Length: 208
Image (cartoon, rainbow, N blue to C red; front, side):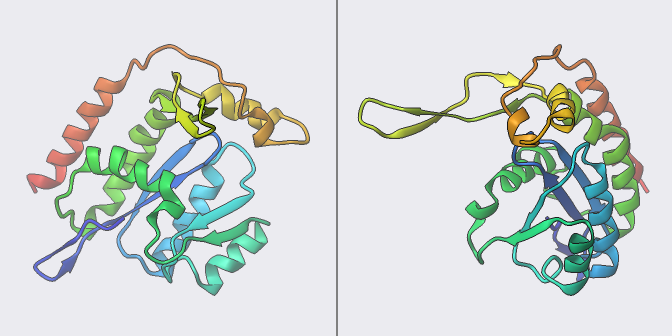
């Protein structure tokens, strides 16, 4: 996700990786969208998931669809698929997270490229732990109504840090078998600290 241009200068790029089963989410930032900058971040994100990654789905941009990324995924034995051009619903979960988390937290304003490293520190130290251990997620449940139409409902919000552990320890079926083992945990206690960290982070480069 690009932060836009200003006076002919490119902004930072945000990379959002979301697991479709558990909604485990990792966010990173890069200065440029070229392979030299993006490939190490992709490798780092894949290593950050607490379970084996079996598939990698991206948009159809050349920054993802290239020989270097294919070589990395082949080495890790990860299946690669891509979205169709101009079909955002092909990657709907990531698109929703982009708006609900990154845009909401980081805003729409231009952020210069040189702050990508500072953003990454904020993501690694504050945002990613918050997303994966404190922020509730909705999981859809399909229900068939009297007319035979399938409707999606979201009966409860649950934080699934235990789900990731169950997924890694599950046998045979892997993540899919653990997807029904939701365990509720206490309400988040450090949401205010995330807000404070965000404020200090923004002031760090706005006031420079």
